[in-house]
Image (cartoon, rainbow, N blue to C red; front, top):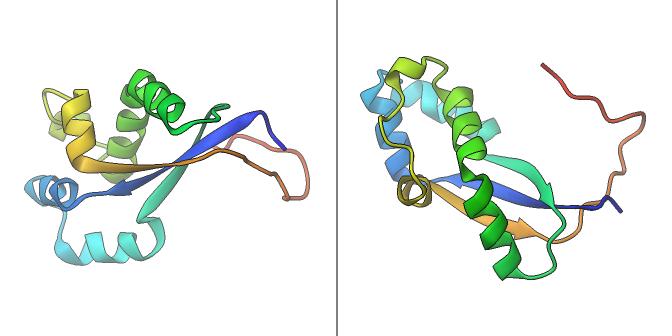
Amino acid sequence: MLNRSAVVIGHEPAFYGWLKTCGVTDEAIMARREFADRAVYLIPSCHYPEEVEEVVEDMFEEIFRRELKAWQPDEGNWPDTADFDLFTRWFTVDGISGVEDVGRGAVAEEA
């Protein structure tokens, strides 16, 4: 078992509404949603939901930035204020306490 927990980030309708204001079409959103509707982020090990909440509140800016970049790489279209309140309106967060690596080979970061 890895010494990490994980959070699964889902996208709320308000997030997709914002994407549309950036010129992303409904067709493009639907095509991406079929494969990339949720993302998983490893976080420090947590044993209780309250710990997950604290870690996410501490790390939300990094997760927020990664989610925006994945869907809208042009930072000029990003919201002026990307605070925790907006994060909680645009994304759902589900915690996972244990992470097991059953993949083969070394873990490597992709560009």
